[in-house]
Length: 121
Image (cartoon, rainbow, N blue to C red):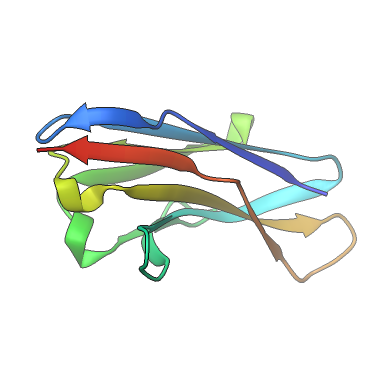
């Protein structure tokens, strides 16, 4: 099993910043792609940002220019720097880690339990 734990959520005023962290752990696994998604009450979960094992990044249009995803492979950790936050960014943010167990070739996606981000106006 791979454990995925997010941290860094909280309450922030509009225009402020937060930095989310997500650490993946587990023996006999190689972490491939990682990413962040979010879900607001009554809405579908949406993909926010992804980063591949090679460092390539992709962002949802709603967060381009404001959010930055990065990773530290030595720590199996992915970060989401969120700047210029808006009330519509309020959601539970979930981290995913795509892990390949040693000896296999198919990655499995593991999810954290989420961290709440609330942006007040």
